[in-house]
Length: 154
Image 1 (cartoon, rainbow, N blue to C red):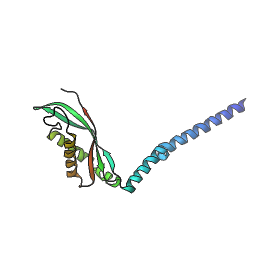
Image 2: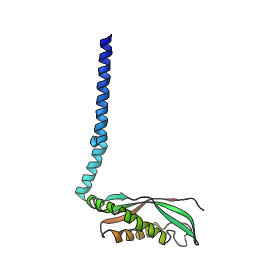
Image 3: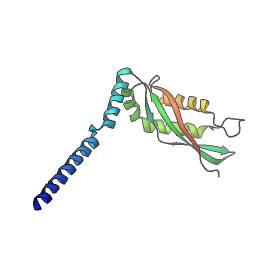
Image 4: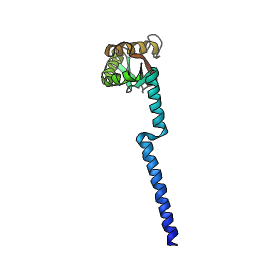
């Protein structure tokens, strides 16, 4: 009877040890997801495919007269020519955030004469123009607005 208990305990310890080792291997970067991400990055670097650098959420005021009526919260990503340049652009991310926030507060993002519609084409052009004052031309190919959400009206 005691032999069965000992063998059961040894089996349980072996199973837990194997599962723990597998979890460690996966968490340390040996899992399939980590491998797929590494392959994607290497593939992007080898082929020169563009990569994306998401920025922190940007808040743009919607003005009525001299008062802020509400804010529009924008999720923006930069399309960069390759992985090598992404690292260089990422270093300047705080400066890019600053210049984009200043641009959003300088002039309205709402289309004149169209109610409360955002002129996304003009907005993307404005933001890209500002990014290119910080980053050499050709490195950032596009500014992508991935989400725009209106805040509560005041």
